[in-house]
Length: 400
Image 1 (cartoon, rainbow, N blue to C red):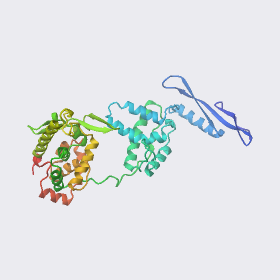
Image 2 (cartoon, rainbow, N blue to C red):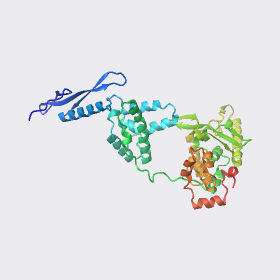
Image 3 (tube, rainbow, N blue to C red):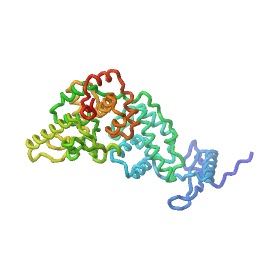
């Protein structure tokens, strides 16, 4: 049978390397893949294959893509470069959000960052997911990563897909492989929301009464987020008219503190202040005035509602630390600082406050989100407690 003649795009070459005394043979493919979309110059792709059949197969694939207008010329863009370009293009992102994206994409950069983005495959991502689920990968701080939950893996895939979509829109990628990866089932992974009964709230507030940050805990149990508590200034509080304006959020990321607008448009809100919270805030003002006299020139007039004994606002993480200490001191069930906010909404729900009102109070994006979050909170014990004891954080605002 006559040997097939090689097409002009394929050339048989002998390398200087030898195996078993014979020169190593490769088939070099050189094919025109059209004009570079940025420079307008004609581009050629050149690759070497071990066999003639591999070279012919790649030639056929490229020619078909070129004729259909779907071929994208391989560039030097790596996965890491694609991620960086996408992050730089997101001008409206809050610093904390951008940092969250960087953190969740860090394993992608570490394991696949040097790979050409056009050569990224579903198999690459599947292998990465297996490693993340197993745990043991090194983090940016050279620590061993714990196994990732399905929810975190799925979030990583969503963010990566958004980053790669930028390359697709620019014409440097034909398809977004992150969209081809199957998401993991998250059933049973979300931790059960922990909240306090009205009795727990009373016990905690009585225990914390007079502490430097007791008014911060009142604000948390009135539904404010940690960042909103940290960013609240006395200029936002009108004790005479019993109202406070939530307009600033102070968050920590990458060992820095960032201050900006609250989490969402609806998070910026003006709330009536319950009488007990008014009392707590007035007491905080008196404590701060006494601290100011005690430290003299060392006092920093920052204007924040929650400050340490020298007038400086604590970092959000410091607030979390002192919350844990206060909870331990009170001897009540351990819950997160953010769960104080959940406690407020849950107790409102149990007392029959309309969902739309709760959503507005909490600064939720929609009443539907509020309903989906708190509709489960019909525990009989809580219902009984709600009917037999006052709800501390909302009793003065909404009544019995």
